[in-house]
Length: 236
Image 1 (cartoon, rainbow, N blue to C red):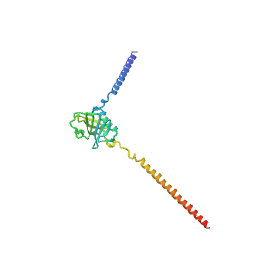
Image 2 (spheres, helix red, strand yellow):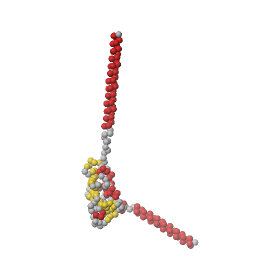
Image 3 (tube, rainbow, N blue to C red):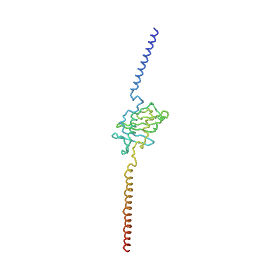
Image 4 (spheres, rainbow, N blue to C red):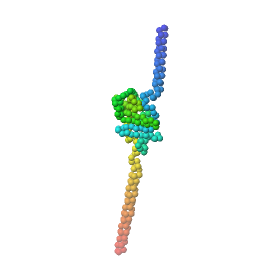
């Protein structure tokens, strides 16, 4: 009897421990899920994407600039060009929400990261401030890039390649090009075809068949043959 009581007590203690572990793990998971997004990665900039009104970046040795006026993106040098806002908004959102996977501090030799002579430069402006990003070498192992912000000397950030991919676009990807031939398909071809088939061919056919052939036939058959016959009959 005493032995059974001891076993029961042990089972109760084990059950209590399991229940405690269950609720402890549940509370931990809830706390992890409620962590703000800012804790996921190292924040590089503190800016809102809607506040970005100008983007300048290098791509394949050429510098491109786009600016936003009254909420609409334009090619800076030519506002008559219609651009696809999706790509520019993606650039602005990616930059405003840029997070590094790692920050290397107290860096004195930028050349080891390819930042002594940056591979490319990204600049974006708000109404009150300009931000600049120098892009260095790509880490082929981690598929990431080294970047440096001149306003934050001594710090080299490591950012995912997906951020840089947003800027791998030229005007042919961003500027909307009107479809060619949209105005030539309707009136030009149809009018020409109708003119040849309807007016030209039909009129000529009617002219040859109706007035020309029929009149000549009537003239030959009627006046020629009939008159000749009457003449011969009269003579007889």
